[in-house]
Length: 267
Image (cartoon, rainbow, N blue to C red; front, side):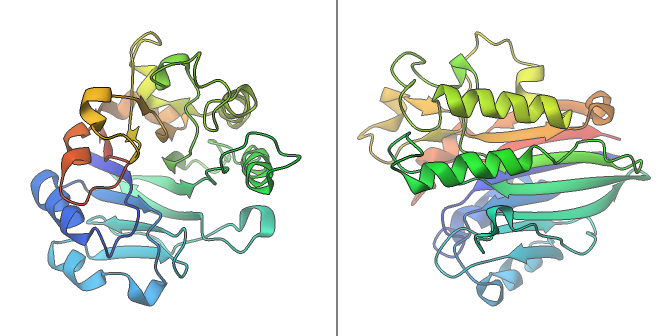
C-alpha cells in the first residue's frame, strides 16, 4: 500500500479554503494534517472537503486561534487530544489508522511560536514554548504496543544550521535560538524519533518550509526557515520513500506563510 501524508499550517482554513481545495485536487494526498485552522469544530468546512473524497475528518478547534485537524481518505480512529501546559489551547490531535495491515499512530502538533523576545523571564510566550517542548519529551515514538508512530506539524523551530537562511544572523531570533534548537534535538533523541527530511537530506543542504509575510519579495529574498516537520518511529523508516516541499504554494493567491510538506510511504 502506498500512502502520502501532508502537513500544512494553513493560517485559517476558512479564509484559505480555495487553496486547500486546489491542493487536494491537484496533489491528492491520502491524509492532510492542518494546523492553525482558527475555527471551532462546528465551523470547519467538512462538506466541501468530503465532496473531494476526504470522508474522514477529526478536528480539535478553537475560536479565532490555534486549532488542528486531520482530513483523510483513509479511515481514522477516534481523535484524542492532549492539553499541553494545561492552557486550554487546541494544539494537538492524535488518531490511529491502518496502512497496509499495520496500525500507525499519527500526532498532529502546533507548537507555540514563542513571541519575539527569546527570554523566558520577560516573555511568557517564550516560556510557554519551552515548557511545551519539555512536556513533549515524554512522548515516545515506540510506545511498546506494536503501533508505529508518525509526528507532524508546525513545530515552530528550525533545529539545524541549514534549516534557516542565516544561522549566524538568527541565533538570537525566536525559532532558531540555541535553547530551542538544542531542546528539539533532545526531544527527538529522548522520544526515539527520526526526522525524515534530514534523514535523507545532507545537513549542509538548505531546507525551508516557511517564508515570512514581511518580505516584499519572498522568492527573491528566499529567507526561509524549516518550521514544519515529519518524524517517525524507526520501524517506519524502511517504508519511507521521499518527501516533497511544495514551495510554489507560497506564491498562490492569499497564501499561508507555510507550504505543504508531504511524505510518501510504501507499506
